[in-house]
Image (cartoon, rainbow, N blue to C red):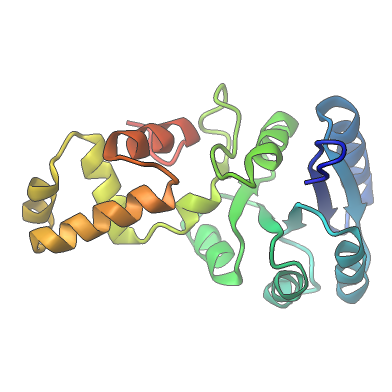
Length: 210
């Protein structure tokens, strides 16, 4: 973040200037985000993004000329502290998995509103919320939710239903110490300090809806 001005720098990477340029202008004017559109072929786009050094990079799923994973790997290597969000066509499970495998920190779908994208950008560095609390189902996925394993999601769902650590072990047929370890990892990955706070964060960010 630009400490001098207190503004987040965001790069919008894609091959549709008619979509991204007005969006970058809106983010800068209406939400105080220093947004810049980055287009062109992969090598050119990556070079522009490295020069801009954004806090958050939003990469269109259609970027990279079929080598999206390569583009993200180059961004990750050159900008290790930058949060990378995938702008995906859909929120299908395979897309979420592909985003995580490619090294993205989070994902937001193209049918999400501009407000949802702004919220994702403003919170990406802390991982608290990737969409507006007034739009709980609009297609944004936090970086932290991407990093939860299938087992940890099961543990989180049980925590949300009020299940104790001991009971989680029994329900999942795992040792109590193993259940405790899973619970602790869920708490850490959600940036919480307790089970109750972890559940609250998960509900606030839309990771769970119950």
